[in-house]
Length: 403
Ligand SMILES: [Zn+2]
Image (cartoon, rainbow, N blue to C red; front, side, top):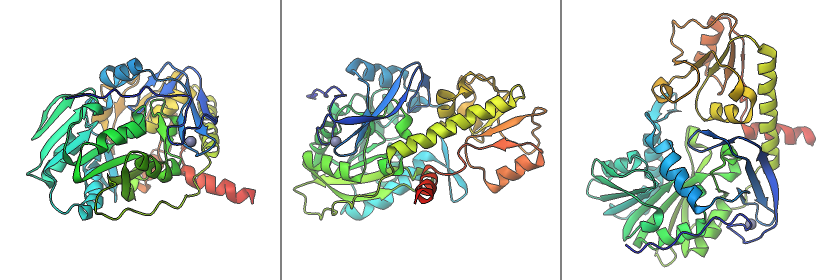
């Protein structure tokens, strides 16, 4: 296998339009949140291209840093239990929700079942194994920087995307492109492994949604549909479909590319959505963090109970004083995911019979369902939810107030 060198992340230049003009949109000193849910002792900075609006990491990320971050430190691929997503009120493993979504989008574009499939950044291979159930005859190859071995019929090789050697009828990269130093090189390299009518399926957080991944230090690129179409053209690819994620995956966009020489019809270029101003989004986050610090001040020294230990909790532990405040108890429906995760407090499920510490003050990291609200009301406790509205709703309200 010939491995073409992966470019180093270019902190000075926009990966989409090549401009070096940019404004800082987010900066935090001393602690940074990573996409696998850790808090690390680093400064974080994001900048927005003045010409095309693409947002990128504003500090260097050397090749050695990348290898250590994903090959050694990264936790997501090895997590004890998969996150559960609530879709239509029912919990489902994240990989099955993703599989249903991708299947629905991809199927109309496939004239026959793919005979060879590659997933880049496949982790333990849950999604890849899911492809195996949809297309039982297909060869299943996975690449991951931290994992190797077998999952069902899938073979996972520990290697970067540059090791991909086709031809493949389907190449999938879910939440990978935002991590790579050069999105253009990524698309070019994977595009070159496609069979004549092969598809490249790429999902990334949507800049249009003002996704919270703007706060992740290891997401190097934040792109919208227009940026993806443009990067695709530079790589000899066309966007033939795009889709917004279901339910809790609403912040993700899914883009299907094929080779420019294919007989399919491409999508028209996206009408530029009025993407939320990233600076507005950052102001909302800053207000949330100030509100959480205020909550902790008001309730000190009462026992603090945090309900919801996922990503939102990690963000608060990184960017507010929650990280340095003793927590009496953590509550989460998915205890298996957090027991043994190294959290400095006990963790349990919000079971019907659970008694909370006397005088407990509850910090929610999600908007409670009616049943979660009823659980709190039954216990006669007060709670605080800094995520009471979605980012976009809050922005819409602000814009409305300004008019
Ligand atoms: Zn640009």
